Amino acid sequence: MTLDRRGFLAACTRAGIASPLLPGILFTLAAQAQESSSPAAAVAKPPELPKITPEMLDQAAILAGVGPFSADQKKMMLDGLNEQRGGYDAIRALKLPNSVPPAYVFHPQPAASGAEATLNQAKGKSAISKWKPDASIHVSANIEDLAFATIGELASHLLARQVTSLALTQMYLARLKRYDPKLHFVITLTEERALAQARAADAEIAAGKYRGPLHGIPWGAKDLLAVKGYPTTWGAGGFEHQSFDEDATVVQRLDAAGAVLVAKFTLGALAMGDKWFGGRTRNPWNPAQGSSGSSAGSASAVAAGCVAFAIGSETLGSISSPSTRCGDTGLRPTFGFVPRTGAMALSWTMDKLGPIARSVEDCAMVLEAIHGPDGKDASVYPADFRWDPSFDWKKLRIGYLKSEFDSPAPLKLKEAAPNETDDEKKKREEQNAAAQAARARRDYDRRYDLAALDKLRAMGVNLIPVELPKLPYDAMVPLLTAEAAAAFDDLTMTGRDSLLTEQGIEDWPNAFRTARFYPAVEYIQANRARTLAIRQVSALFEQVDIVVTPSTDTQLIATNLTGHPALILPNGLRGDDAPKPPAIDDGDHDDIGGPGTPVSLTFLGGHYQDAKLAAFGRAYQQATGFHKLHPKMD
Image 1: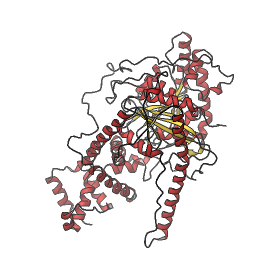
Image 2: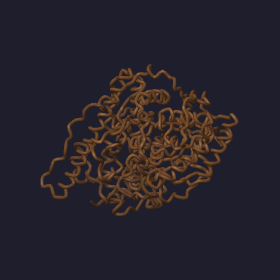
Image 3: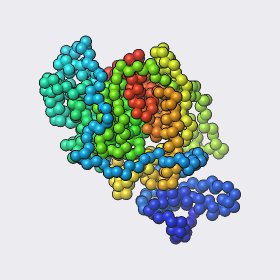
Image 4: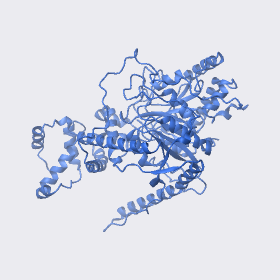
């Protein structure tokens, strides 16, 4: 195809379109190509757009002021661009009325200065939860018997002076050093800082200056949280020596609660997957597999009994996925509950920080300490979180996503095309085999999902069938990649994206380049569709307080877009009869663990109803005990 670039630029100018602000040029180029080849058809009906070509990419790159891209880069981009363009139709089909605004809210006021900002501005926030120490438990002679203890158990020992924070800290540091060569979950040990904090905690507790259940408890941070005096690498090549002069707000708040930071944990490079510049973080239940991500090290270290709790982050599954793979309890809070000041930004409208721990109560104790406005992250809403383990969860209305628990439709395999080549046949057979294996795994895990419903009914829960609104959630996901591409614009523009370890078709360098061509109008339309999603999913929580669901993709995508909280709980271990895992872990699926690995269940709640969500989750854990299971490390 040959286009008159001069004429095209002139047309754009007449239309008032400035070339640096033209991310939708590929759509225009493709439309022009169709119209020039079949003008009559274009008049009769909307044209079926031709495939985007490398030549179009070259022209679009010039107009957008990016590139130039190599032949290999363009080859990787083409499939994604054609697929992304197809997603526009799903949102256009909603026929959004003029009354539907975008899903984001602009706050024009500047952030508060350091003098005006405080670590805790949430009105009515309790300094110490209603947690009470258990005086009946006694510590073993071997301190490593506490490696898998809950925060509540550790706090009871500390308050009773049965163990010191220093001893716990030294024990966890020793375990981190022992198991890191096998699991690769540590980027930086904060040993000097930790030992000083532990000694200070012991002195305060001895003097009766008890700060609460996190006082003296060792924890770890996902290495996208800034910690003064230590590198903050974001898991990415090229950022190994990056550092910041101020602690992240979450780190400051946990310091104020008396918690002891022992390590900065791995994350997939720039918060994708479990591969980072130093290797791949492993699943303690099956070290031949990755831990999933991107809160890879946080989930792996908690599961391995190498820290009492950790902070992870989620934009689109980064707490849920590794918690599922590693058998942890993960709490993804309501969007805007926890300030992200000092954390790497991937998507300003989707990033969330939250705890990964052994139990729901552990997560609740941590969330209580870290939530609330800090005067700097304008997205944070001054909602309260009061952890009350005595809350009467039986008065909650519990729904379940019925279709997610129903038997799936019969699997449709790809059939041979006419004149199929040997290569095409091989690819089709591989795809069919992968689909059959995935179905076998899902069918096997479904028994755990159904057993969970039976257990809930046995607890006296009246399960109400509900469904997620039918909306094109997948077509809204480019909102994330567009924001991520903006967040890391300098990598694409300078070519420093070549320093990132992973360079495949689904990795950030290619995703950032591809997102440059996401039209601004389509970004706004997708946000308007997101408004519908927020309204309709929120309406679901007018019918019920909690929704029970398998830890599947549809609800994960939908609720990350709408900002609703999620609680991910371990739900048992696969038996010896479980389908064998694939030879290669591609990182795309969390259900491939195989025999002896954990499965999970997810509970969803309404906006800022995280305490109710935790109360119900705690009741389920007390009834099942699955959170007490842990891998054999030696």
